[in-house]
Amino acid sequence: MPRSAAPALRLGIAGLGTVGIGVVKIVQSHAALLEARTGRRIEIVAVSALDRSKNRDADLSHYAWEADPVALARRPDIDVFIEVMGGAEGPARAATLAAIAAGKDVVTANKALLAHHGQALAEAAEARGRVIRFEAAVAGGIPVIKALTEGLAGNAITRVMGVMNGTCNYILTRMDSAGLPYDVVFEEARQLGYLEADPNLDVGGIDAGHKLALLASIAFGTRVAFDAVELEGIGRISIDDIRRAGDMGYKIKLLGVAQMTGRGLEQRMTPCLVPAASPLGQLQGGTNMVVLEGDSVGQIVLRGPGAGMGPTASAVMADVADIARGTRLSTFGQPAKSLVAPIAAKASSPAPYYLRMELLDKPGALAKVATVFGEEGISISRMRQYDHPEALAPVLVVTHKTTGDAVAHAFARLPATGVVMGEPVAIRIEAV
Ligand code: HSE
Image 1: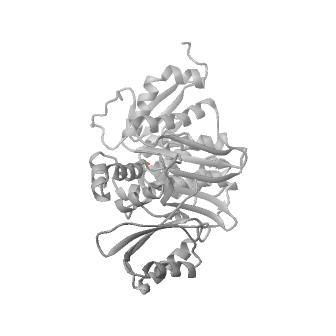
Image 2 (image 1 turned 135 degrees about the vertical axis):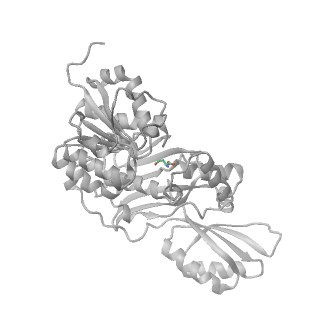
Image 3 (image 1 turned 180 degrees about the horizontal axis):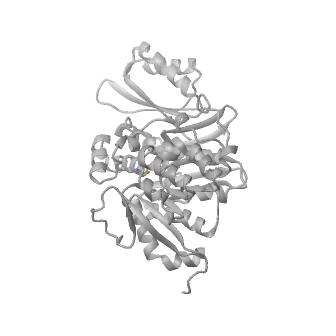
């Protein structure tokens, strides 16, 4: 193939873990394809990582080595700084700032960095006419940033939802299919290498919360507000709840929901029940799914791998290809300075709830509980009591739409009934 007349696009890659090596492999194996599509050669000039001597299953011998990612970011012979080190602070932040100051475009897979510092970084980049792109930071190989920023640019976005942490979905679906408790499957996930170095990023919902906050910014034209995301991890989900929710026709997911309401921006990343037959309910294993809703398009569902070498590097290269083609988009879909500070909704919109409790099996017990619910304005839609060998009867309730506050008030009154034993469980049911 004849060489393109345009100058090559020169990359510097900071971080040679799974994602960095995935990028090296794509640049090496798809050089011709990338040049044909973008009109420019794409070449790696320099790389950086903590340990030079590590065996990395890729030929890096033609690239300059920088021990310090900040030095890599400042090299005059790179055009694009690819940050795939991770971490909200430290080297990732310092090197990204250095790259912007040195006039480089930035492609990053770092959701934590952008969730905490995205506004300042985007403003700094845009002030210098540079771009920061982050397709790989949200839902791995699913091109959700492109879908939202470009494909749905003509829509007012009404809601964004998603299962965006594959590790949590693996744990929940494995508990369900194998009938195993959380602790056992958590350990399995650790053995399989699915957990982040700090597992709380996964099972505490933080990683997925970062991703949701980034999508919400693009969807609603608001500054990233990670601190306003209501976060709850999957640690309290029991095999009992997975089974009982299944009996009532639901699956439990760590589900992110962002929507703009008259009361402000709602963002939550919490365990939710979704109908078992819905696309989200059927999502198995480590796969991700993002559901986007716009006023003109209606609902679209994107499903695919949310992590791993190939999928994440695929997303990095989508951003690199855009830069090579001259497509220059604002980080959050509109100039960073035009993003408004969102008002956080103080409480979530009303929804049905799944409630599980253990009742003393004696006359009038159910009536006492139903009275409390009635007095708190909670209307019961469905109820089921299970056969039980002991004196405690497992009781499940699906409510009509109510509020988290009403459920909390009712639960606070249950001990006084003298018939509810242990801690009752409440999980929101999301209409998907
Ligand atoms: N640990 C994440 C997941 C991938 O399990 O989906 C990186 O965000």
